[in-house]
Amino acid sequence: MTKLKKCRDLLQKIIEEIIPCILFCVLFIVFIVQVVMRYVFNNPLTWSLEVTSICYVWIVTLGACYAQRLRSHVSFTMLYDAMPEKKRHFLKMTGNSLIFVLFGLLYIPAIKYIINLKISKTAVLHLPFSVVYSPFIAFLSLILIYLLIEIIEDIKLLLKPEDKEIKPL
Image (cartoon, rainbow, N blue to C red; front, side):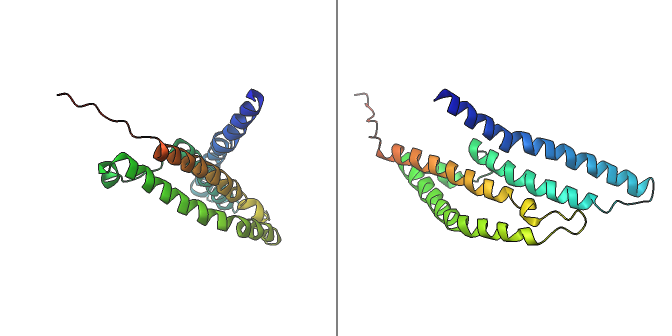
């Protein structure tokens, strides 16, 4: 079981951390090269915008998975924090369940659509759009897994008996 867990952790690290980091470096380098070529040599590159756009799509999509795993998305919880614990877990479970159902309904059509995008190619590099938008499938898969984990945790917390506080006499 530990080998399976190590394999899962390595795969998570590659998908959510290493690939976005490498692509951010590529994006940054290409951006700097583009600025130098445009303003120093007065010869703008045609492919740089396409590369930076594709890198950005991949970084944001895979980075969102990382943020979901760490539960570090920005949220405004002033009203949520003022509620009793059971209501908070119920609301979180309800919201996550709604998102889970909607993303679940989106999963198969998204795969079919991205497969169909292989016909279209980008203007300069002639990459199939299925390659450009393929991280969306990883995004949907990982978000569904993370949402399911959170829903199960909230159900366990809702079913847990309440701790009775002993009040002093």
